Image (tube, rainbow, N blue to C red; front, side, top):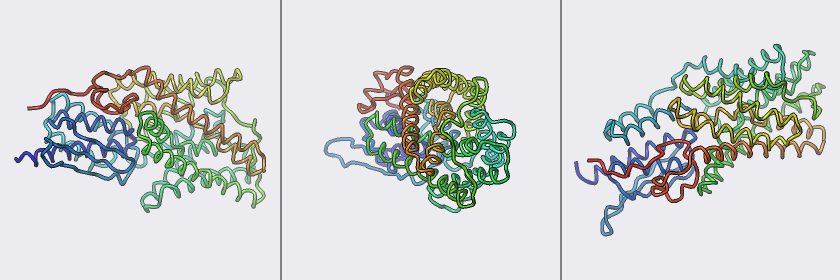
Amino acid sequence: MSEVHDRQRTLDLALRVGELLLSNGAGAADVTATMSSVAHHLGLRQAQVDVTFTTLTLSHQTGVDDPVLSMTRHVTHRETDFADLTAVDYVVSRLLADELTRDEAASEVARIASSGHPRKRWAITAGSAVTGAGVALLLGGDWIVLLIAAVAGACIEILQRRMARARLPFFYAQVAGGLLATTFAVVLRALDVPVNPSIVVTASIIMLLAGQGFIGAIQDALTGFYITANARILEVMIATAGIIVGVAAGLSIGSALGVDLRLDPGAAGLSELPAVAGGAAITAGGFAFTAYSPKRVVFPVAVLAAVGGAIYFVPLQHGVDRAACAGVAAVFIGLAAYWVAGWVKVPPLVVVTAGIIPLLPGLSIYRALSLLADDDIQGVLALITAAAVALSLAAGVILGEYVAQPLRRESRRLEQRLAGPRLVGPLRARARRRG
């Protein structure tokens, strides 16, 4: 094998690893450091890595007088699959520990990229139903509300899956999800079913909110990848705007049919502490399951989310600002997620993403829209509150990871721009060259 061909194989492996990580929600800093670790360990020292939201480029030059060898891959498909994320992370760890050769690692990465999801579609639909019921419990719903929220969550998952198969842009899937959630509430109100429509809508749209996108955007911004951060934030804004358009359309339909879905700003909120903890646990565990997390992760994530929900709820009941409560709870989740992830052997990103799902501001978004539909200026304040809560959650988990996972000297040597904690990939750079 010629030297050029050997370098091409190494660059291709590093690029494929980076593609899988980036397409499953890893931050640009994590992708950059992981690709650099792989290339460095396989003998390509000082390889140049460039990661944006849709493109990965890796280049290497053996000497000043030698031509530069450069390869590029484009990320065209994004999907949350924590099983793939965990599997790729494990392959990289084994490669850097010399438990796999380059060719064996390349075969493993190709298998991961070509294999389907590890769970049946009906199981994911059931997991979405459980997640919806968990949010309803979190907000104080009775058994009727839990049942309705579970049905709505399952229907939204089926609808979005079918729209994805039709290759419609994600924005329209978000609009359809928000519209379907509000339509459920309109029908229930028209039939005089004794349920709070805000709980039904909130339980349904919580799964549509882009929690992982917020975390990735904040991490990229903190680590100096501003172009990628801006792209992620734009993606999150478009996804959230889709929910807003769908819910607003549902409210308009209800109003046209004479069904009043307006919400008194104080009419709905969190329930008692046991229900908050239990609802947060069910919501986080259900989301982890639907995101294809390894089964060993579900219970620890549920326990972590229950504690995080309690930390959020107690100061909120004593008049502390909602965004501040969310930030404190998120810092705890970020701190604990590092140790939980090490215990269950998954990347911390898997744990923190599922852990903050119960705290996402679904109720604030619905409250804002219902108030704006009634020409109430308080709706603008509710939207600002929702944005502040989302930002506090993302920044809080990153801060928690900062404290729990201080940067190693070897990581700083590997990637000078890396200024944040690692949520995916090896913690240490492998300095030695493989034979």
